[in-house]
Length: 437
Image (cartoon, rainbow, N blue to C red):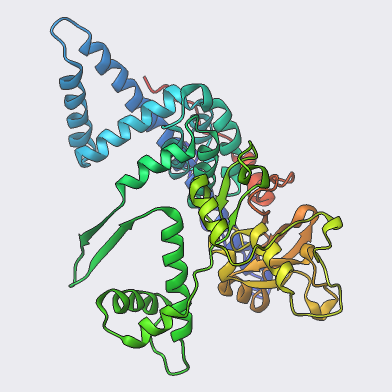
């Protein structure tokens, strides 16, 4: 195995570190950490191969005279758990994941073995592929695995879930009717006098509750308010359910939850026009979509065809973003456009990529959703961003690392991720191949 890269520091000629040398050293240290992460993924692939091989041997033992598949598998789980010092539930999960990767998801396994994705990325693929027929695995992997190069594991999980919903052979209407029977609320005890309340609800109801709590928390903010946004949301929920604060209940009665559902016209008419989608979640059942559409007091159409007259730019005429253009940006971006951020776009600021003060227009191609944290980062640090075709954003860190983001449904950037890091990884090369069995 190649030795671990040492932390890098290059002093300036004067003996004191310059800004440039510090940034170069910082970037080298971060890249070295990424190399270690790549090696960890390769080792995880070795673990997968060994566990899958052990499972195959256990199956062969079970087929011998007097063997029992149930007892042999239990024995295997116990041996893995006691050897790796993990709970048996975790051991069973690791064995199942190893078999899935080794036997049914070769592209995901290969990406893990080459260090291109982490084990958490692989788990995100496994969770969604497991309920698809084996005949759909190759198509599913082909659409999901390339996304991992530019997404966090959490982002990949969202993308994989949406794709699984579209590819599942059973109607989402039938699956939702069965799944909604599992709705429940339960309590998880925590330490220090705390507990976690978990609600398993239909997505539309859960999103509506979440948005209501968000609006309540924002309405309770004040200059003398010491509570954080998260604390305000938690207190608002408790106040409403326990009737502790009449003011909170009064505020809640004046709030209409903001949820956006996209329903193709042909689908609404009962023809094959594609699934309805809940913004920020993905496909939902048609019955719910129709009910929401029928109850909506108004219908907002977000179209990009210039024939419709929808404003995609107001040029330099004004800085403030009109409502239809704001809706178009939010629906297209879905989340904050900083690399890896999953903050919902409707809770973000709209930022002019090329600043208004520097000639930037108020148009779809020059606007992007940025959460307050990353909006501040763009303007108050040396991070830079530029716009490209297809509403791509090219970010550059102060140390020179480059990242590209696109709206979720757009094609991946052809330039690929992090050129500086890719060059470093190519110079190191892969680890020596080791036979797992």
